[in-house]
Length: 235
Image (cartoon, rainbow, N blue to C red):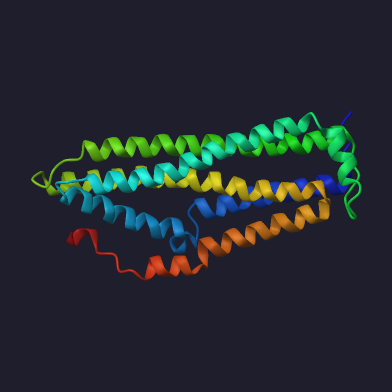
């Protein structure tokens, strides 16, 4: 029977709160969402799609989209390797536990609890895999929209609506990619649980701080928001 210490229960609850709380705060509308990377890049995606509709030759747009898809595909492939490694680790629980017991400050746990932690990691990276593969499909759909995009001779309102829909699809693909990457960050936090539940709580909080800084207070965000974006009504 799986027995969990109260401190481990608290640590796991804190981890879930950190991940779910940050996801809700970063991905849903709130007072800071308009200042995040997601909103900043959304404006540039709309500009990109409008510029795409103005071009007769859209090879450059397909090339840019292909570069994005390769990045997502790389993470999807890497995730399958990580999952395979953790599945293999399930069969070596006794050896792994005997090895880490030699390390100071490492909490001693039962083989069953150790396997439960590995299963949690597997679930996290399976979640990331599904996010990456869905993001890849969404980028594929956006490629189709670029191929089917109207030319500049069409009605301006129709082109504006088409650009907004294509930009929205790009935003959804980027959102799923970001959630997959976020799973990597929190997966790394779970690794610290194998050492100590107190360290697990500390690393979970640290991951939230790192993600928050990069999303809402990074120099990358300042660079994106410092670029003047034209008013859509004037394009």
